[in-house]
Image 1 (cartoon, rainbow, N blue to C red):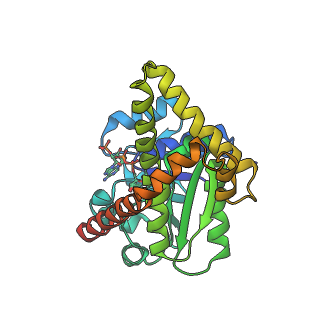
Image 2 (cartoon, rainbow, N blue to C red):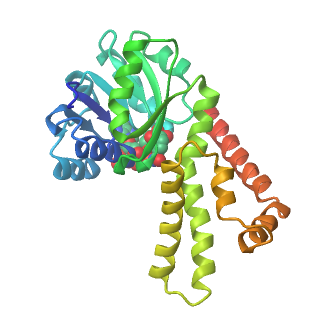
Length: 272
Ligand SMILES: NC(=O)c1ccc[n+]([C@@H]2O[C@H](COP(=O)([O-])OP(=O)(O)OC[C@H]3O[C@@H](n4cnc5c(N)ncnc54)[C@H](OP(=O)(O)O)[C@@H]3O)[C@@H](O)[C@H]2O)c1
C-alpha cells in the first residue's frame, strides 16, 4: 500500500539512497512524494537521475515541500545544516534524524515545536532486509506508527526503550554489517589460501552466511545454540573448531571490539 506522506531528505548520501531505493522498490511511495537536497550537486543529480525524485536546491525548500523531514547528513554536519533552517520548520512537523550520537534532547532543544524521532537504519535496507531501530522521547502512537510505516517496507523495525539501546542497535546492526564483512573476509582468505580463486571463495562464504541466516529465519523458534548443535556432532570436525574458538575466547575479543565501537560513538557524540 502506497504511503501518502511527502518525505524530504536533507543529505542525499548512502543512507538516503538506500532508503529511497528500498521505499520505491517496495512501492511504498511514489517518486513524486520524495524530495531531497544535498550540500554538493553531484550526488543529488545521481539520485534524481536514478529515481526521478524531486531535487531541490536548498534545504529550506525541502522543509517547505515535505510533511516529514529526514535529517540524513553526518552528525558532524548537523549543526551547520540545521541552525540556519530552524525557522523553516512548521509547528508539529515530523523530523526523523538518522544521525548517530546526536541525542533526542539536543534535537528537541533546536526544534522545540517539531515531533522528533531518532531512527537508526542499516544499509541492507536497500534490499528491504534492513534493521531499523527508532526512539521517540515520549510515547506517541501516531508518531510511532508513522515511523513504522516509513521503515517497515525496508525490513525489520524495532522501537527501542532508550538512547543506550539505540546505540547498541547501531553498533550491532549498522556497524554490525561491517563487522560481518570482516568475518567473511577471514573465511574468504582462508579458502583462497587453499587454492580457490577469489570469486569462488567469495561465493562460498557469502552463500554460507546467507544459508545459515536463512535457516535461522525459517526456524525462528529454535535458539541459535540448537541450530548450531545440528551441525555439531560429538568429537566431530565442527566440534573441534568450536572448541578452539571458545578456548581462544573469540567472544571476548569480539565483545572488546563492540565496546571500542561504543566508546568511539561516545567520543563522536561529545564532539558534535
Ligand atoms: N551508512 C550507514 O550505514 C548508516 C547507518 C545508520 C545511520 N547512519 C546515519 O545516516 C547519516 C548519513 O550517513 P551516510 O552514510 O548516508 O553519509 P553520507 O553518505 O556522507 O551522506 C551524507 C550527505 O549529507 C550531505 N550534507 C552534508 N551537509 C549538508 C548540508 N548542510 N545540507 C545538505 N546536505 C548536506 C553530504 O553532502 P556532500 O555530497 O557535499 O558530502 C552527503 O551527501 C549519518 O548521520 C549517519 O550517522 C548511517
